[in-house]
Length: 93
Image (tube, rainbow, N blue to C red; front, side):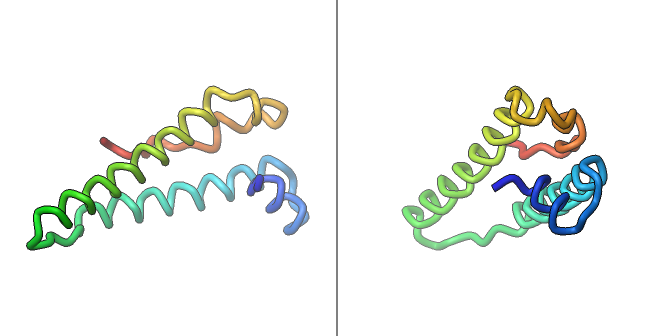
């Protein structure tokens, strides 16, 4: 499940180019998620609305936790990639 390595091998490009490409993909998806947060529907049922918002908050926590873990982990050190994988974008909670 390492997208950087997969892009590196599948596209036959160097690791730095793969990191750059994956970072762009990541940033695009985070931006899309942030935009969708601005367009969330409102449900008439307070129970459904609360459950829905709790689900969205869980997604935000999940995304943030993954980013925090990846930045603090040594997993990407061998490529020097952690500094390139994550943008200024963060999921605000």
